[in-house]
Image 1: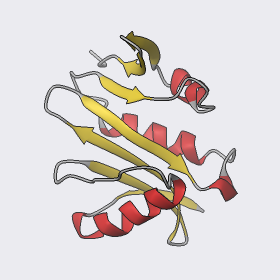
Image 2: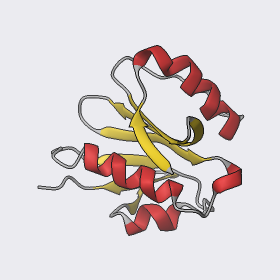
Image 3: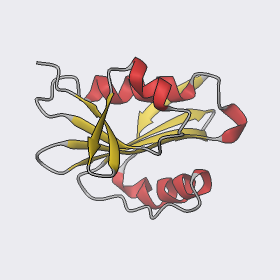
Length: 129
């Protein structure tokens, strides 16, 4: 059974190692005010969501799922839990993605839309007010 939980600050180093395993090229830094969710099955990490709060907006820094369980709903579970955590926010949620990222469909289904900032393409979810 898959469960989603908040990562505690004492677990940030372990979470960063897991994130790097999924995205080896990522420069992972988890700050004191960040929120990290972990999807697990019997304490085995399957996926993560990393949210940065910069005061004016929320940035979905990354969401990733272990290759062995992709396509099984783990990403959807993480996205739903992330949006549930921040459902009362009056700030937009930003997510920078590559144009060919297959997860764009997942983000679109959850209310994100494409927005272009110069040459950078970002997905944005407006506040729920």
